[in-house]
Image (tube, rainbow, N blue to C red; front, side, top):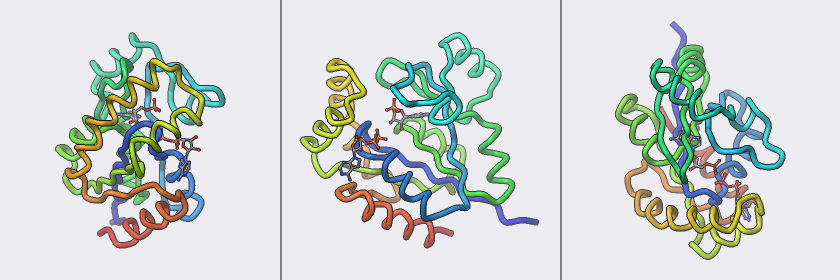
Length: 186
Ligand code: ADP
Ligand code: 5GP
């Protein structure tokens, strides 16, 4: 039988640099599948349906929940987010490593269902840096930025529950640290 793939959970406050760091990891590691989540939030400029997210309505989301089509799901910043179950299970069975960029409630659900999953928390060097990055990204309204910063304070306290904490000071260095984790994980 083929060796199963491993599940890597990546969490961290919005703006900490998860997409940026994972993008660099994927340039240097190819046996991966990035789990595309479903969300009810509106696409940001440049985001494509089915690539960054599946952008769906709350009605469609609730229907998927009812049908058991999510591996986990949660509310975050007044929107719903969920991991479609099918692709994750297929890829793991094929021996491909699966990366889930999800927030902490979802991470807890995955850890409960799959204790062997490896959790990585990406932290910003400081809250000031986080705020600067959120503003620099210029994709969220002032209200959204405030809400995300408030949430971030609570999220940072959760870092201790993760298997690994990686500080995103320099994104290439942070990606290197994650590659070490991938290479050393069972
Ligand atoms: P997340 O996916 O965690 O919400 P992003 O990857 O979108 O965060 O990063 C938020 C912003 O910070 C982006 O504008 C990105 O270019 C910038 N950024 C990410 N990592 C770094 C870094 N190490 N140094 C400086 N800016 C960064
Ligand atoms: P954003 O709106 O900035 O893309 O994401 C907001 C938060 O939702 C981030 O912390 C991100 O990791 C998380 N997230 C994205 N997809 C999912 C998902 O499928 N499930 C859960 N629980 N969180 C998700």
